[in-house]
Image 1: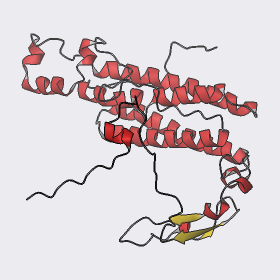
Image 2: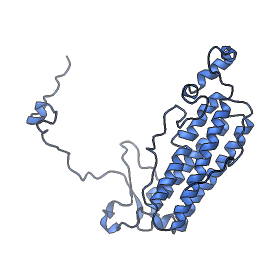
Image 3: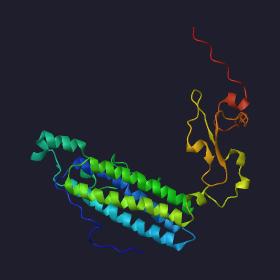
Image 4: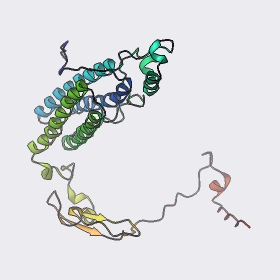
Length: 286
């Protein structure tokens, strides 16, 4: 159950409407780095969160806050679309500068929403929920959440740098600050569970004795012309404390050559595939 206030979480104001910036703001609503993504991700993680009830409550609370961010961004899009030309008959549309602005708009802001926000990214592609990660494993989900908040903060800082509007800069500075908190909030959940080292490898409930442990801790070089770059990933103790990182310069070829045999009749394959006849080599070009 949710409750709603008629007021926004933070003031949203635009000094000079900018339809092109409205299009860019759509990425923060319906992009893979945007607020629809994190709101739905936290909701679905919460619905599958077992164990410590505090984590479920935190996820629900933050998901609800993210809905408020969608609301604010939608309002910001609408404010930036104020005064945008609705037809080429308008005097403003005859101005070459305004025509350039109209050319930089998302036409669906006129055609589909009547100068309002849409659940789409900056290219007008609808958000389709394919980037919602809710695994049922709290540690895996928290790391996914840190990534979501990190890329969201990167996006917000880029938007901040793309506008000179003081109202928009103030609003975006708020979103950037909340992303700062949310990144660290999810890391704090991992710390509450014993820390990242104790959480690894995820899931830490699977017995490592059942994995091929001789392959667990080497960093593999697959380059034909460069040695493996050396770093923390190639030497020293593993983060889970269960092994030592090493470097392997040449992959061991341990598997067989794949052979699927002949194709089945009725599968839509060629006769040669079904009979198993070899395909003759292509003669050289003379």
